[in-house]
Length: 214
Ligand code: SAH
Image 1 (cartoon, rainbow, N blue to C red):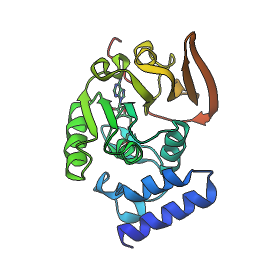
Image 2 (spheres, rainbow, N blue to C red):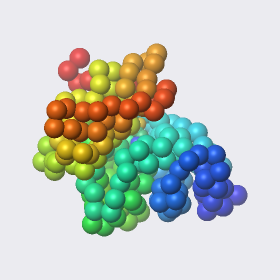
Image 3 (tube, protein in one colour):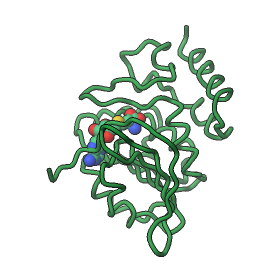
């Protein structure tokens, strides 16, 4: 099967099974997921499953990317902080939604994953929208704050790090898996003048967020 047929089939499946917005489906239709997982066949690249990307890390299943992107309520022109860029796939989907007038700032702990993601995003035409920093996401990326939205693709055991909340504007959403190895839930925080409001969106399983202090 060709990559574009496999991609169409995935989008068709996501649109039937999930309550995904048309905008997010369109964004996912535009991103060549097989370019982010070069060792996978088209069938595997476009299966609705997580896939290994090296270093014990995984790229989330497409439906999880769709759910997370939908929860952020992104608009064209938004500036978004991403923690855990991995191979860059999720960042590319976000880039499709914020467009050329927006920006995605990705922080990735593993240097060679960050470098490979940066090169790949550049080659696929996302270089003007996505920027990738090698660093510890617990610090966020203060230089480009405030962000309209933020998300983590690795699980924070003790809740969303304070720096990320501080770098997100009032009214902005933060979507993150929270918890340890045994139990994690996907939460959406909304930044308020007093702190944050929190909604839960069910149980999930993500790789843990590395804590460089421990
Ligand atoms: N969104 C990615 C999948 C990422 S998997 C994609 O589309 O490919 C989670 C990523 O979080 C891994 O690449 C891992 O190295 C990274 N990570 C783990 N702890 C981190 C930390 N403290 N700061 C930044 N990135 C971290």
